[in-house]
Image (tube, protein in one colour):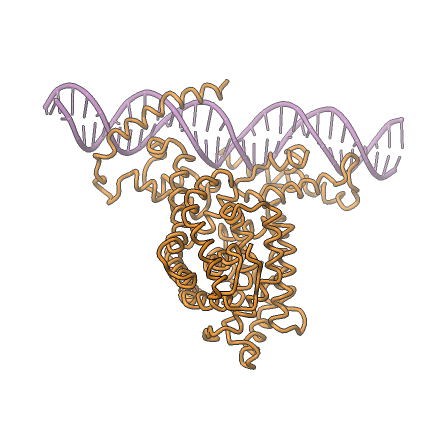
Length: 240
Length: 240
DNA sequence: AAAATATTTAATCATTTGATTAAAAAATTT
DNA sequence: AAATTTTTTAATCAAATGATTAAATATTTT
């Protein structure tokens, strides 16, 4: 009975609050004291904590504190923890995918040239957002169906083009034939995995954060070298 | 005040319960109805849920239900959610590391031979436990210092041997010189990353679980091929 | 089989946590 | 500047959740 009461309240009251906000939001400028509006501060705090600790381990109170605002304000602006997470997750996921798909679908570059650009750009990007891959992969695993549509939308445009290109390059003899699935797993794995396994890798090798970053900088040229080696190796997987 | 009361209670009462259990546990045989003892059933349920959803997202009630026992029993046997998690995490982590370190530290095999064995054994192992890598990596990120000792203990034995071997192989000209850090990141990345990114990869490529497993079976021979290609490539990173 | 010990459970507790409310403060409009 | 609207907060609520207790049941020991 308590459950029913709560639900009816939330459906009745909160949308009104939401509308009030929306009606005014566009006109409002960043607040006095800080350099960001309260809404932006909440989003930034949420992005930091969600990305660092995941959805389940993040408390709305911690977000509010990190943002320097009151807890109620979070619900006033974003309606619920889920809604706020949805926004952050959508942005994070888009960035995570875009770093790959942009360079992959773009111009008339060769496979090797594309690989080169993807690796360099993605390592730079992930150096600034090292927690992103583990966060995205983890939240997707926790709720795969939820992201099915998003993956399709974000990836579909570049997929067919890429598949065609890598098959033709294989046929032409410019590279050894390789299953595109394997190729992309190698490219992303060599680039992204060190960030995902960073805590272990740093502990095992006893490296500082700066050393890790230097290590990733080295990989900006090494991974493309290795990709070329792989594409010219005697490995001959069937091109499905 | 309520807090103090609770703490004193827990310190006073529960250890007694724990001792009672321990005193008898060794003598007890698996229960009547099922084929596992209640304690084992709880551990199995905990392993499944923790590994699938992570610590924060797993409810003790869900573990109890999955195990088919009462919630209180979980606390009776394992004292707390944290303690139970600690046990599961230790076992999972050990398995995760062992798959690599065993083959790496063992015999007088060459680097290439070791890589070959690691990849084949690890892919077989992870095919049976596909959620393990993401779980381990994620929980470590959430609390890196907590696992520092464990990583050291588990990894230290094989580290120096491996470093020496790969440097000497490089000097001897049997392989091109390569930073061991890069080498291990490549080896593990090419092997483990597909499991970590599995939900995305399967969605992008539209593959079923069986197809994914077949894909990983292919990699049992392909990854060693690529490792050989990398070790024979024109990439010449400094051997730090 | 009686006594002692171990196991299991239902009921309950205390805290945490997401969410709401009502009222104060600030900003904007009139 | 008065009225209106928007923003912010302190206080509070209800549900979820980890944990405990006391009693019942089963098992082992004597």
